[in-house]
Amino acid sequence: MADDKLVQIDNVSKSFNGSSEQVLNNVSLHVNRNEFVSILGESGCGKSTLLNIIGGFEKATAGKVHIDGNEVKKPSKNCMMLFQNYGLLPWRTVFKNVELGLEGQKLSSAERKDRVLNYLKLVGLENKGQQFPHEMSGGMQQRVAIARALITEPEIILMDEPLAALDAFNRYYLQDELLKIQESSNATFVLVTHDIDEAIYLSDRIFIMSKNPGEVHREIKIEMSKPRDRSHGNFQYYRKRIFEEFQFSGGSNTISYHI
Image (cartoon, rainbow, N blue to C red; front, side):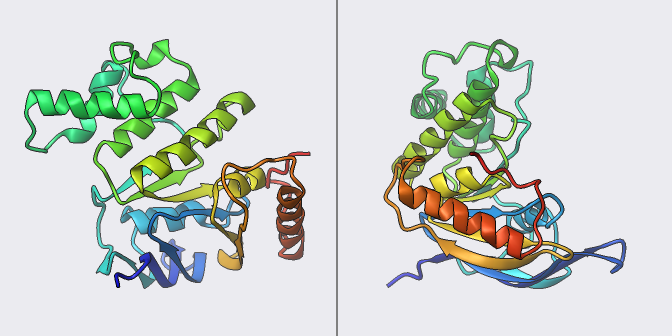
């Protein structure tokens, strides 16, 4: 039987400026295949640094990260990152932005076109291929970025607060889209966020980070079926429990908690 653990993080620590500024201390956790995990914490707890270490964009000062049994030493197309700022090229159409993810792959023009159209359809933009990013809303631009990440068919998608800049309606819509995409693509998602509701709505498990230096304070398994009702009593239970965990760990009001 294959090991269900896709990502294994063992005793990872990270310091900057030599060793004077320790950001992460002895962080250990794992992520299962096809799981949606959130790393939840206030600003400065090192959650984005941890995500960059998982993706191979930064090196840990101590400890190791393995993906599918292989130690992470550099970025890989098997592990894609989504950021808040979308990263779309303004001079390229939506189609061409998504097609960018296929560069370096030996595909015919017809195969490229089919792949791009398939992933545009997956994110609900099948009729927007000839538009340019400046002609689209922030939510639509983020869907383009998601399609570009998915087209490489990675095992893992890392997300550094990709929905934080969106209004509530677009944010809720894209949260639902992410759940549909996870179901249809079988990808594994690791989300960094400071929004409690977002973490509960999307995640199978949540890792709560404390800071100075960043450590895993608590792991919470969300035992609710998806999609989830934000007004349900069980949802409110998890909100209250997580909020109390932050108060206990000394967290501040940089954590979003929707009343």
